[in-house]
Length: 134
Image (cartoon, rainbow, N blue to C red; front, side):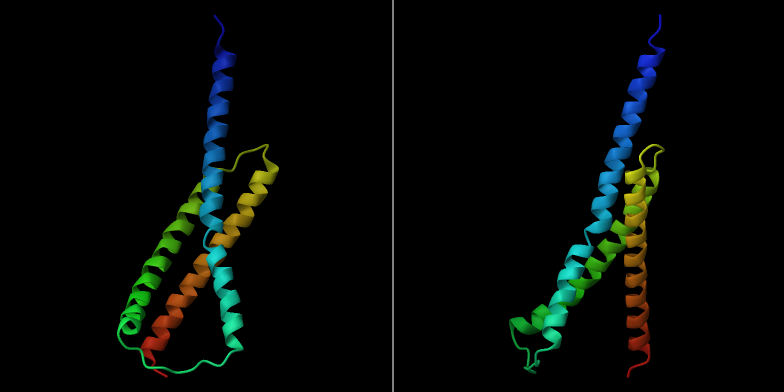
């Protein structure tokens, strides 16, 4: 007889382990795009103060320009999918009794929302500039 308390404890441990895994995956997905974004911003500021010389792209340079557009498209698509997955995982990882985890989840969800907003603004501005050629 008995065993009800033991089963309940093992069930709670399994649920807490699942929430911990969801939390870690969600945080990883939420924060991963910010690292290259911050590095890119650093390079942009560095290059903003340098003179950019205009050169004709020939050979491999012309091919690399076309490939970079493709990589940007797939990269932004991956960011969108990753951020939505991060939000879902972090929302599912909320659990009572874990204040720090919940607080970090809220901050990560806000950062994911900001990244989605920035990607949306990028798409809107790209569409606007393509259709209203200045």
